Image 1 (tube, helix red, strand yellow):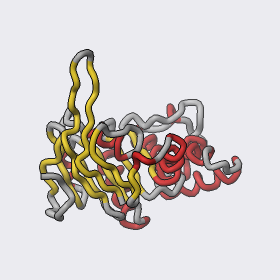
Image 2 (spheres, one colour; image 1 turned 180 degrees about the horizontal axis):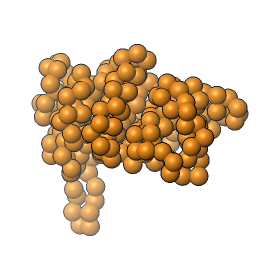
Image 3 (cartoon, helix red, strand yellow; image 1 turned 135 degrees about the horizontal axis):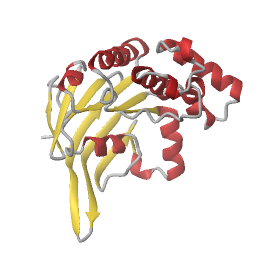
Image 4 (cartoon, helix red, strand yellow; image 1 turned 120 degrees about the horizontal axis):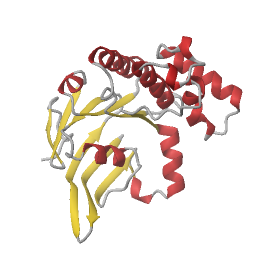
Length: 232
């Protein structure tokens, strides 16, 4: 499904070149519930940006359903992201002037759907994530856990094949974090959605079937022991 082969990423910082990813090898299979765990500065968010086609690597190959992502132009990348990838962020990234319903419907604007159909689909997804009674609430009227449920609904609104969640529990208390992880695991199990979670939290990582650690820009372990899923 998603295949990273010797992925490298560097940035120019003044006269110096800073290497962030140092040769990542990773296969993400359909139906995975995968965590990529690492401390701040380990390269995990950079890796997520490459997985989500928000950033291009400076070396190696990224194959998406067998196609080299480097052959896609900006329009193709944007179209693929909208159709196939949902994003969940630690800070929720909800628009304060929109209701939960309209926030969840945002990805569907770019599909050309009319407002009624967008809101119908978003309402169905919000019901799935337990937010049917908060459709007309704006973000400042919601708790942290409720905001994250709306963010998850927004990620799911376009029926993506993959959800990438960057520290989805980082801004939540432990009880609410458990609820959000149960929801993501349920969606993975019952809806067949592939979920990749970027986290620094070992407890979050333990709740995933596959667990990979990143350190100094390299994947150093893959706890399910599956061959070919982590680099040397």
